[in-house]
Image (cartoon, rainbow, N blue to C red; front, side):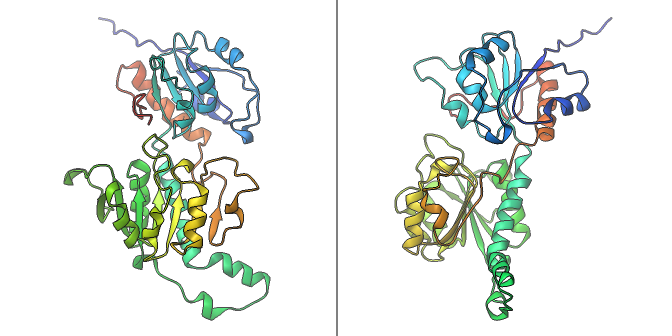
Length: 342
């Protein structure tokens, strides 16, 4: 008896990220890829010039789509035959900005790029902690001045004597915990609900609830936010919550989403002496305006949202794996809940 062949729909691709199409073809030549031309500078990300009407027309027959969230958002309700969309970003918040609460949710499955960001985020977090504790920036300044400043630069802390609080223990948070514990750091994990023992990460020393943030802040040398942007997390750290960091004069690291805390809160916490500094990769407004106080705030290290980026070859790996699950009728990995927003 002949075995039925699974139907293999065309994978539409609308993205400014380079190398995705060719990598998909290299990984799985049996996936037919149809590229939709996007007019815009990849370096600008959201600065595309292709009108939504043109995009909607090009995708009117699409069943499966791989696209950037800022491309999907404006045409969210204009994809009549769509069954599955994969976003090239880990965070879906740029899509949910276009969700109309007065309408039913879109009638297709949304998945996100995941399973790859953990190591990159961990490198960023550990790298910045090491750089700060070992005075890398100051030693570079000494070098420029031809100064041999042994007494100041030999006065550093080993990571094994430090503690880190992680807000958000998903896939990325657990990888950050693993990397930091490898260096001997004590790791606090802040979660919505304490998991059963069999599901706890062996790299987390203490699990704490969000309601126990003051205790975590009191005990941690570094506090790292990896929470997504949701109605529950936006503004979560605004106000004077960082006053609980005064005991250790913690350093705040943000690699999650910028809207968990406003910049005035960070600047005030540093000026009050609650925080000794901040390491920031995400911001409420991006690009960060030249007028922002963060640029010149003492103890603050800024980076332009590059802690973990979507490399085309990694995006291709994830979509190829999920595509085969799709044609086989298996549950897709990394699904986003329309109801929860993540």
